[in-house]
Amino acid sequence: MTEKIDVSLLTGRSLDQAVGLEIGKMSKEYFNSVSCIELNKTDVEALRLEKDVPVEVSTNHGRVVLSWRISEGLSPGSAFVAYGPWANQILGSETNCTGTPQYKGVKAIVKPARDEHVLTITELVKALKETS
Amino acid sequence: MVIHTDVICPFCGSLCDDIEVNVESNKIVGIKNGCVISRSKFMNYDVERITYPTVDGKRVRYGEAVDAAAKTLAEAKRPIIYGLSKTENDAIRKAVYLTELIGGAVDNTTSVCHGSSILAMQHVGSATTTLGEVKNRADVIIFWGANPIEAHPRHLIRYSGMPKGMYNPNGRKDRYIVVVDVRETKSAKIADQFIRIQPNTDFEVLQALRAAVRGEAIQGDVIGGVSVSVIRALAEKMKGARVGCLFYGLGLNQSEGKHMNIDAMYSLVSEMNLHTKFAVNPMRGCYNVTGANMVTAWQTGYPFAVDMSRGYPRYNPGEYTAVDMLARKEADAALVMGSDPAATFPIDAVRHLAKIPVITLERKMTPTAMLSKIVIPVATSGIECDGTAYRMDVVPLKLRKVVDPPEGVYPDARVLEDIIERVKVLKEGSE
Image (cartoon, rainbow over all chains, first blue to last red; front, top):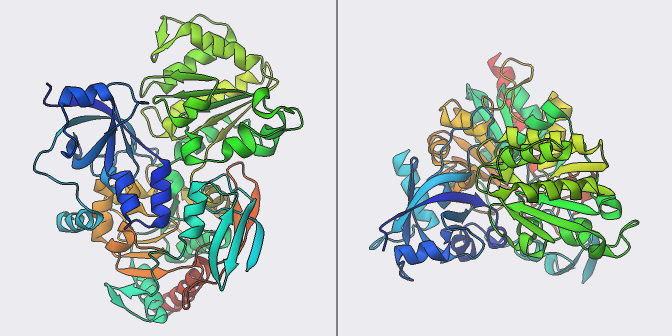
């Protein structure tokens, strides 16, 4: 068993995210689509993740708690989160003079987050206001 | 029941123009031909709507919200207007004019999606084409860092994969489709060939492909996780195309290398035209982000990242782009429309957005609206008001109005016009 794994974090569009945001960003569908990290099965087994235990994903820019699921399309060491306010908690704003932050290929660490829960959008915005 | 045919879907840059919308008593009751996202947009257009304006969370009359918005913008020293990609061209034109009036900066969502594409186009030039030409002529299609099945679900069906065209009478059978990506996406699964590359190696793989097209030596056996023999075979496949098209997505813009990845891709396609006809097109996400570039360029000469604080337009991505202006804590007020930066920007930039007065023109509650001082509800362009939008291949199409907006809710262009009139009065009064 491994306590944590290093991953290359990819964020991007997904069909469920697009469907969810058109219902509304307060909707359950949107929440489910953007607050979940996709991991390779090998990495899930190495971390011995339990079904209802979320994961903490951290980078140099912050940490966020997400639910998880297995994706067959990812290589071991790669992880995917759909674009949204959850992924943005751990992305940096450096744009290298292009205007575009790095949303893909970001070094991140994933580990189980027992006794924690995935924040709702209201909780995320509240936390944001408190730390701004 | 009224059946509206050939309605444009205002979701992604494909702007599918064959949607059938059924309306009964000013309510959409069904659609045909749309993808699952299109269906969600049309069938949920009236769900979770903001129906009245607010200032500091309190319900106000429309005129009070417009006054408060105008006062906020007129008094700001470094305001920014941001978004513009999920609205129609006339509203974008007015947003640019408002920026000029208040001496602010104007930026659109390009800066966090295909901004690097524009930098590369400006460096290299662009061998481009329309989706109609792709449908009729292209027999080699490459998707690089793009996942059309999830982001542009009918692109393959209408233009690039399945349709029968003038020189592709057998549809899918006449096209060879390659997907290059770091993930085996749903699009990769339907391709004739999937090439998996390692994250952040697009530049290296593209440069190796350029060398292969030129017949030059490539050092090493594996580049970015791809065998050189696979790269050479792809080069030959591309050179053997009757007409080829390379569609690319944000896998290139948002990884390490950014504009240099796309610089390499545009250079590759330029060189491909020594051998055959080849084009390159970005897969634009928001339905009118191309319009945001076009209209901002008509008005200022530049497609995004424009500063008007000196009374004339200046262009500098990295300086006048929204993420940078917020992360540097430079902007002291913002007007957001046709976007949700609190859901799409990195946390540092959003923290500053939460500190400054923000005016949001929005249809539904979003994280940006939740952080905003002033929220003004607007009509859904392409459903509740008409206008023009640019498809991803820069073809302008007419959006349709199929239902009326809720009472007291106006199109973006009307709200901006009202703010502009109030700003003019405030500016004249202070002179």
